[in-house]
Image (cartoon, rainbow, N blue to C red; front, side, top):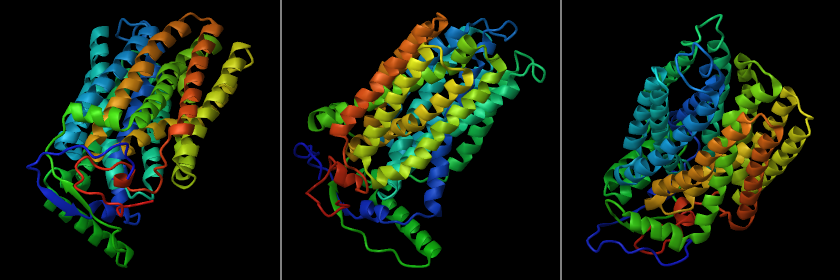
Length: 497
């Protein structure tokens, strides 16, 4: 067991249960049931990508006369973007606590509903303050999604596939970005839609797609790992048994026996004090790793890609309605990174892949900044460079979510994801857009190049940290990577490496 100290104490009155549920889940072959999990949980990132990309691409249109809002492009990419991220940080912490207390399924239904309602209200914006308010609330919902969904993914997907599946699901954000970029080209065409209607329809379409996802997500089950710790061991056993029967029927052969059992003291909830003591007292190096990874990727993505459309318009005279074409290209590079590199996180391993993706993307970003600063780039070549940079950066950024969702104990998982997402994103994702909006608005090439260099430096620094501190979690049971706080006795047989 990976641990820096003895297990945390549990209530003396806690019931004790011995179960093979973790080992039974980890030895399952890939099946239709797992595809249902991927589709039900992963598709919301497509919506998130659609949403953020549309906002970035409509910034110029919203600032134009006749848009229906009295707002500037800098306010959209600066204030509105920062409020979206602030909402996401707040929502992650709030819903993360509820997710560990009341379960994954309840919360990933509630958070999607919040997200959809706020997006619908954004489409009805009539004043800038209304737009800002519902950008915050939209982020509030999506922040909760990060905690609930990443917890569920890791606890339902077999250890053999956990890394690549987590990366691809988080990377699916960029499928939505591609759709949002291309959609904005059509919806911002004033020959088709009036200037005050096209951007509203962009948000409205996201709501429609989200309602479809809400219907699909109803069939995603609760995490059996969460169930057996929270006094619902009979539900956990029934769920896993039904899944095993379904997969045996699908494959036409019996499943191999599970690797072992684990005995735990059941508990209803866990306090913030014990969570903080566990994360920072028991696993300080892992805490520093998670924070480094999140700050690096958050500044790069929230500061730089939010303003990509503005860069094209300001420095390359690309028409407002055409920025979507360019963004679709870099979004494709972002999605291909986790898709093509994801398997290597399970085979070559977490440490080498996390550190290399961060370092390679950081170095390439330095080169891009140098070429941009000396005036060597066009809109096309700039986009090509960004596509390559983000191919590696996207895999690295997705691995940040994977890392914090698997290296801390089961009872703290959702809150750990929420905490590192909130703290890292607040550092890079709130300050980043505000700083970057000012640098871009200046119209000075050197100012924008400086923002690129800051993002590159933070990515490289995180890569160095990962090279020394990343946990070798590939193909290992979650209970082996981080012993549950509720464990009753050492169990080295569960999913051991």
